[in-house]
Picture (cartoon, rainbow over the protein chains, first blue to last red):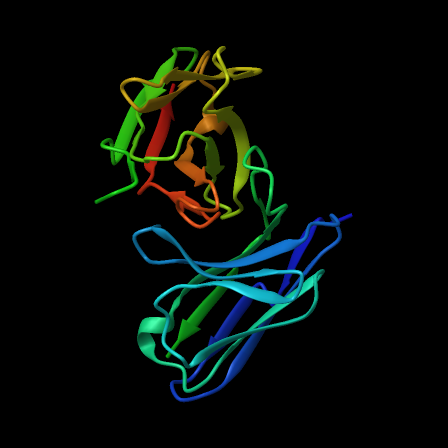
Length: 114
Length: 117
């Protein structure tokens, strides 16, 4: 049973298109996250939702819009894709109040914009 | 200022030897958690080990141990008896409290470890 599952695993699309990445967790966690890993492997948080409420919104272009229909799901929609959006996007989940709780990551979505 | 600093972009170690990957951190919180993750070439993020700021003993998980020096704000990962399968990118990360980093996991830039025969 996959704990945090993301789809699709690979996404190749043209500049200007709109695309979505879906994420689901079955761990019963109350908080979900989106991270972006750039070509230098640096991981940076983008968004976080706790029980469907947005709690972290880093400096991300407003072409990126997260949506959490319930605490087990967090989707990422990207409008008007640009070449610089090419990266690996990771979804993760955790419990908000427990500092000793690490994050469980999905397997990542490799987005390539051509 | 960087919250997590990993000064070794790349490291080589011979099989069966021990290796230490360095990590220093910066926080004003009293309560925080330190984590190490492994990212093999296949891309997934694998949790390795955790150390709490109030833990008096260094964390250990199998061949992994965390050398925690609170006064120096360092949390080095020690891998004993390296195996070829340990070749991967290793990330140090910190989770601060709600009043500190906003309850997010902040990562260092990573160390690429290569285990050689």
